[in-house]
Length: 114
Image (tube, rainbow, N blue to C red; front, side):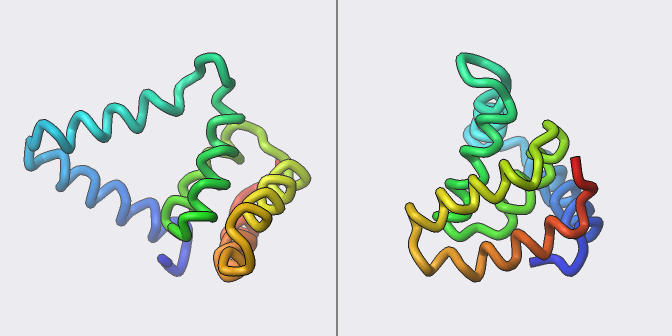
């Protein structure tokens, strides 16, 4: 996990640019699919971001947890809503999620409250 949110953002942007510059069609299509999946549809964006956060915690991907925490905040998700999502992740994923919960809460301290 990057030490700061700014380091995470810089690394993510740099590597995404490098990956997309390779001009690999399947990779570009997957990135586009990922972006489109989180657009508003039958579910609002904030709900999709909360779902992404829970899935990321259960799958134990700290980078994904950070990304979805940032997006949740951008969508106006409150601390109470985030902690509800964290509880779902714990129930689904079990105690193995606890270290990721700790890192999520640490990362959350870097984000402005809504």
